[in-house]
Amino acid sequence: MLKRQEKWLLAAAIVAFPLQAFAQPMWGPPMGDSSLRILSDPAYLPFAGQIVGYSVYRYHQQSGDVFDTTTGAPDYSFHTITNELVQTFQYGLTDDLAFDASIGYDPTQKRNEVFPDGSVDVLQSNGFTDPTFGVTWRALDEAHAPLNLDFSASYQPDVFNSKSSSPTEDGTIARGGQSAHFGGAVSEVMPQFTVQGFADANYFGGSSTDNLINDTVIKHDSYWNYDLGLATQTRIIDQFSINAGVSHTFNPNFNVLNITNGNASISAPGDVTTLNAGLNYHIIPNTFVVGVTYAYNMHDASQNTYLAEATADTTTRNNHENVYGVRLDYQL
Image (cartoon, rainbow, N blue to C red; front, side, top):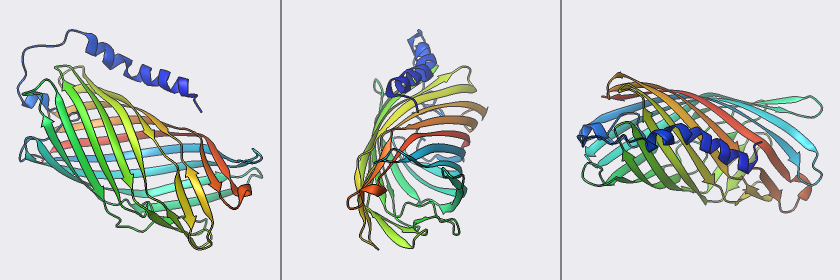
């Protein structure tokens, strides 16, 4: 796994090109309102009465190694392949207030756990994520102010059961608890370049998961995590643009309890740094856009510590993920 210093060098590299573009004298005559809202742009928000759809497919490849924390001996390595579909619709109630709803579906998620003796456990999951309902308010609009200032919030109810898979029975995708998101973003849209900084606070309510391997129920306590990030878009020509960005998620420790047998543990999931990039092409200008995306997720070392059974403690290292995607953005 990349060291922390290498992560930030790579993060700097991925945004270097658009930031060089930002340094050029691109400011032109004042733009109209419509030219400040570009479909596929990080700062995009629909106008009043507009309905926008986002259809996304992502292919995830994740790998990592799990070790015995006490002895340092390898427990197993894992390789996970996930196919993810997400559909989102957004409606502009006013020029500065939009509502959205989305839901995801994973037709297949396959996790191979390879043990030191060469044996392999194959664990499969599928199903829907819990739906998400959100709102975005543009408190300052660049058409009438120096920049855009957006506030957003969303809620994800606990709709679908959470089941962790076993070698003989498929699991589900939902997390087994409700969650909420609160965020703020500052952006500036220029003729050839957009830059946006954002910060999020995410609440994950207590959740319950049926562990199909040993027929127990696992309960996770509620917790908050926080995101900081930068997103950019460089418009090469009117129809073609490049997105690039970096974000970091700060993950806290939280308590876990097996309510069937009483075993308690502390999960320390570690922080995550994400680098992302995308290419966009406007087939119909500002109406129908096709894009391809890529993200690289770098997970810090994580640890599970069992309060009454230290020999069961595990540490996960070398955890990284490549995410390839295709998306369609369209106005209805």
